[in-house]
Length: 339
Image 1: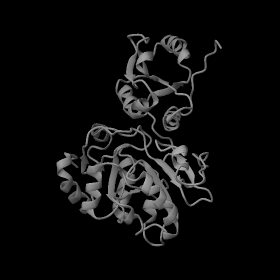
Image 2: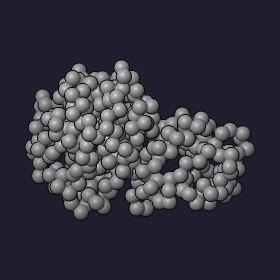
Image 3: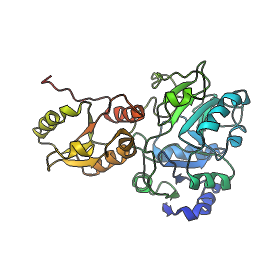
Image 4: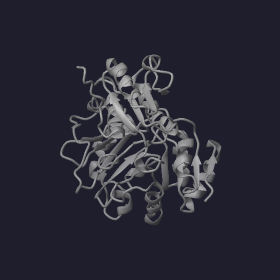
């Protein structure tokens, strides 16, 4: 299959592909998604195949309006959900709710009685869904387990020949996936952190849990990123939590004789040896979140053996960054034996 790169002026071409049952990657403010008709189980199966994604990992349903959600979601959850929609949609918040029986297939829900819904903050994609007239599923448009795509070229690298087209709208604005909140629990629960924080949510609803980001092996995850390996490049990522430890970490890995990459702020990169491969995260956690996946991909392309990646303290919106970085590193942190 030839994978076409479409401009934002070619939305109708993307609509035509979706109508034919083809897969089309689309832009959002978070990462690029892999789109297919959410109402056709035969087509949704192809999303799993293209990504190499486990079939019990549910997909997020992308809509162009709150009204589209209520064709599928249980209307008993409407009062609470619409508070969140009014304040955070369009935007990086995914809402999980029970669905009306017989409305969405197990291919979309992972066999659960709930589904995840999101209205992305991207005019091109909202236009795409509106013209298509139906919701589209939209997991990240990458090979399952690898860093998420924040540029069309990332999608092309992973999925060329496997999908019909990529709707290119340039780099994504946020760079990490949406916050996922589950309304089907006794207390609304964050299943995946993102740029919308607990504090943001508590300004709108009365109570939020934020401590349930993983599931056991026998459980079916309600949201992406809870069970399987995610965001991992081929190189081993090592998180350096304390910036004062970078000189020691650099020295230790330099002595191994391997090719080393450093993913850090400009201040850290200025002190790194010229022989190391470098990728800038900018100067703060917001910039780091935006550039994290591109950095992991960029250093991987340079065939490094290890990536020393900068951690950030528990401040501002760092939870989303730390969540993705920890998963990409398999929780591996640098330990300074001198301390």
